[in-house]
Length: 393
Image 1: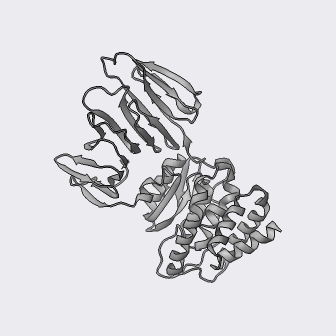
Image 2: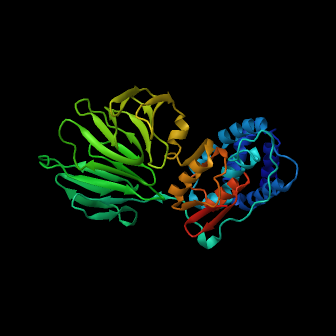
Image 3: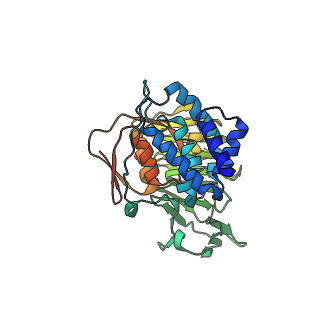
């Protein structure tokens, strides 16, 4: 009975006739382990539908279906475990990819595009894995601790500060009672490609670091200021202390805060440094220029300019990485591939002129790289994977 029900709901969903209640029921059924064979059959049926020569949805139809698909799939996908991806592409890819035909993650064509049969771009023994909790902690004395292969518990005692790794896989600093250390010592948390990590600083500030990022910070905050140095991308939830403002330095830029939540994207291979504010207030400075931004705003500093632009922020996109997603909104192929390069620890090589493509859509970061490349291939881009390198042909 259950298999007939899921099939009926599946077809109503793709006929755009399912009620909100039926959509929610479908999502729940897709996530039940005892529906694995039925889900696989539905996935194959949906993929085969792409072999038709008739055009798929127009951009207007796709926009409406994309919104509905994302609303349906966003909540359950956050909780999806990596091992479930092959089966649950139905909830993460079918509901978000197949339901929007050749639009999601494809260029915004002015005319509908008939999808072609997908190639198999990666051999199983070459498949790069999605990223996870990986980091290297460099202590003030130069010694290093590889956190993803180190057990939980106390890692070091630096002055009056205890450094430990929690059972949740977080790095935490806790000041012991007693006199503060007279000399300031610094630690550096480095996140490789294919990694991410959270650290709780001595003042209680939480920092989430994205792949290919690093944070340098004092073992204890003494004096009138709390100052850290960021490279790459980090999300900060700063513990408020009116008597000790918090500063984040990124090359020539500085962000000054008291207590607030914000994200800084400062990868050197991106065109701009972007500071997005979620709560509180921050002041962004770059040389002689400075701007104060409010929640919902983003300060943008282009690499070839000293001025600071303040724009309305796409809050979901700015924080998608922390919430476990890739979120693309008319994103260029180059920008998409840079994100994949960092998260899957692969190099990107273009064999010809970079295709002018724009992509939109949402994919969980625990998705397998083959699935993502298959999706991208629907935009008439061909990929070949050789070891740790993705070649765009």
